[in-house]
Image 1 (cartoon, rainbow, N blue to C red):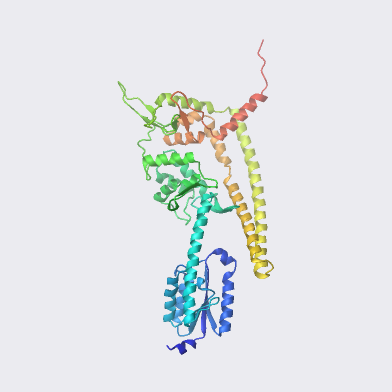
Image 2 (image 1 turned 90 degrees about the vertical axis):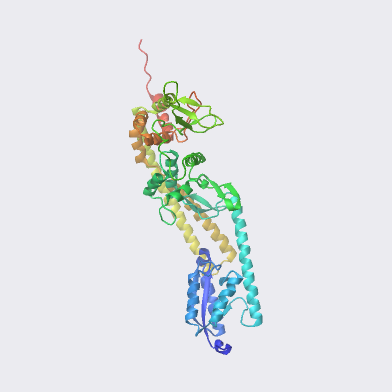
Length: 509
């Protein structure tokens, strides 16, 4: 087709693109289309089609509307003479990509035009086009470097700059983006760690249990044993952020899902038994305190074995650490001390009844407070959303505030909304299951020793970890002071109060 014939084609298509959701919400797509239409009107071209790309990068041609635009140009190359963009940065980010796509349009005898840059088919226009394409590529590379620097700085400050891993949600603190626990998935992941820490389940069985409770990936898919094993080895769940490619290991400023002690306990089990399974053979009922009681000298968990004596095999709990090996206790001796400890935990029937009554009262008050606080926060959130809408109205439509004032005010509002959502998330996490606790009180607290003695290995392990969440230490002579479940602290307080108010009985003369 001759050059003169090409100029007779007076139809044009417009391509507009934004790369982020924020830009979509700030209506820059509409602005691009408006300016491009004005440009076509002044040039005497009829706009026959508009292609609007929302939230896609210009670094790739795998943009649905962009591909649709090229296909439209191919089918209508006898009518369409121009593709109009607001700027070449909307078209492509890399110079080589720009010219490869430009060559495709040239085959269709279609010319690219920019509203903000002086490009055309003249020698000068082609020169400017090459310069601008290179400048946009350079600008994009600078932005990438700047973004990477900012992300590293965020990590150094304790903030997570990436997409939240499963169990967390992305949040914006007053200092920038970070994380907070997912009210649903976070609790399920914590349960997974707790089950694994007992050493009584395979990875698959733990995964089956938490999957049945609702654990799913961010894509709403079931986790595989491999992905679940990887999750269990991720230190971010106790707050440590690790990015190997940047050689960075930094503690985060967010609330972790689990303690480091629980994480380390799970790692020890995974290292000894591998990712795929935890052998049942070494978890014999003969040694229920194995790995639960740890050496008070080196902190390593005790193992159980039957070394042969002069006449028969004897059961021993021993410290397996080759640099320590201080503790060695006869099986019946250590278990006897532990059963005595369990027996001492049983509350009086009066204390147990009063405990359940207090528990119900606390639950009622707590639920009422949570409900009130959630309503207050939801109301504040709605007010802020209304303020956000008014800011958009004043900036976009009324044009009564400057861009700088709009951006500053919008950032302040969004930070406040993020803070409210974080508080709401924490309230949802802070849930007390009163039915489960009262059931625990009736079935277990009344006689913990009997429940432990009658239980199988798994039941013993669950009870041990429930009563003493951080385990127990042993020095070869006596058990260390263990951190008990908070329930026992409450019951002790009730018992002490009963003793204080009980009438004194005068000795008979």
